Amino acid sequence: MPDKGLGQLGDGLLFSAVVVYALAMLGYAAEQATVGARRRVTSVRAASQVLVGSGGSVEVPAETVTTVAPSRAGRAAFVLTCGGWLVHLSSIVMRGFAAHRVPWGNMYEFSSAVAFVAVTAFLGMVVRGRIERGLGAFVMLPVVLYLGLASSLLYTAAGPLVPALNSYWIKIHVAAAILASGSFLLSGVVALLYLLRQRYDRIGRAARFPVTLGAQLPSAAALDRMSYAVIAFAFPVWTFAVIAGAIWAESAWGRYWGWDPKETWSFITWVLYAGYLHARATAGWKGRKAAWVAVAAAVALVIDYYVVNIFVVGLHSYA
Image 1 (cartoon, rainbow, N blue to C red):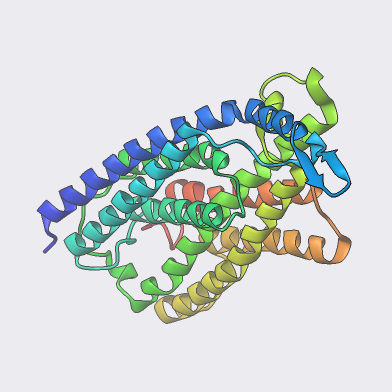
Image 2: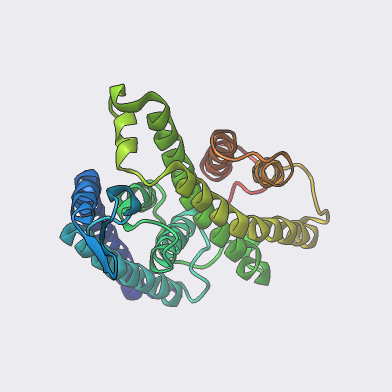
């Protein structure tokens, strides 16, 4: 029997994590709103510095400095994100103990796990210097919306697995799908930001909001590299998830592939991400074309998860 007390504790922790993530989002937004000004201040200061040597002094050109001055709001937001991550992890653990199984047996739990992976990927890339901390506002927004939707419309109390999911394959196939989906969520956000930045670079200062928001973002080239790095990691994981799902289908339904709506959209998503990587490797697609393919793949993933699971009747309707 499920432990209702632990289940309620897990739900409360998830709600707390959403609140902390929302506060962190506001902190990142405050940092991002002033990033342009802080870049200018850093450059002006750099122009006044000199290199002293045997032949005298040489002024350092302002354009050689690319760092951004630190922000208290950004530092606080990062600390809040780390705290929210710990609370979020605790909610997932409590859910597992409450249900006496892996904590990703329905859409509510799956959504929580996917958002957790997205936040983990973001924090890891910030620590490694692969992504700017200020982009947290754009990452936290879909995470908060994702969790808010899960907690309201998709909520399911802790309980046993439905018979169709009661298999050891849920620990393999679904875990891989969660890892890939959370990473793809992050890459989709970065790809959209690339398009915003690239459009600002083309239109210039005459652009209006939200295009002018691109001025506060990292360079288009940096965003392009970020998106590629995440997709290059997540695609093999998604490939494994599709293969594992086919093996599970043979065990459960006696066939590896039957073009069930879930299988079809998972394959469409796989084709789009494969096309993205193939185009970059062979045709040299970078930048705008590649970003649009990444966005299309992210949209296919959303359809695969929400539309197919909720509105389309198929063998996976129990999800």
